Length: 138
Image (cartoon, rainbow, N blue to C red):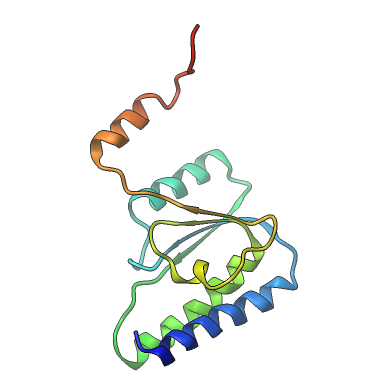
């Protein structure tokens, strides 16, 4: 990524953040990915779980798959501003992997950023097998 493109992306995220920073934090969870046009894997599972367990919490999806050309850059620019805004106004921001906007702003007090990890099947199986179990000596 060229220095100019990087600088423009940083500025756009920060513009969205500054605009959102004047507003109060909202009881909202943002699920964000920069690798796909829709949520998949861990983020999709988290979104489904949130919808089932906490329907009163607003859930926003930011899914952006980079594209080449002028149109791709315009869409990416708009996404950068929107991502900055939601970073400034949401209590919880969950990403699946590297997500550029979280690295160029300092989160507000009261905002939690969560980065999910990609475990292989065996680790997930162990995790799911103890989901409803109590721990410790009985």
